[in-house]
Image 1 (cartoon, rainbow, N blue to C red):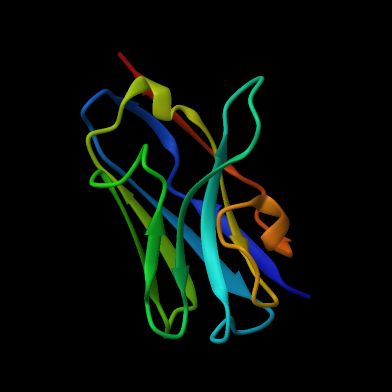
Image 2: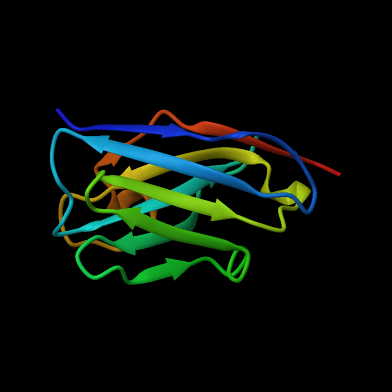
Length: 124
């Protein structure tokens, strides 16, 4: 059974930084991609960033490009999201997700497995 467990969320002031982690177990994801999504109250879940496990290629939404960095540690089967220069509009529940087939990276429908989410709150 695949499990994705996020950690690292919290409360931070605007301009601050956080690092989210997503520990994966139950299988390896070497053939496909993993990603981060976020969902603010009353809004749809939106794409943040993704990484192809095999070659490390990364993809970002325009809203986080230049501020967030996605990475992975193959040995630990763990994905990270380094978030810098945080803004109040980054406040949301952040979810990690994993694909089990080649699919579109930027929509939730492209992912088969999801973590439980971790809250990130950025105060102004």
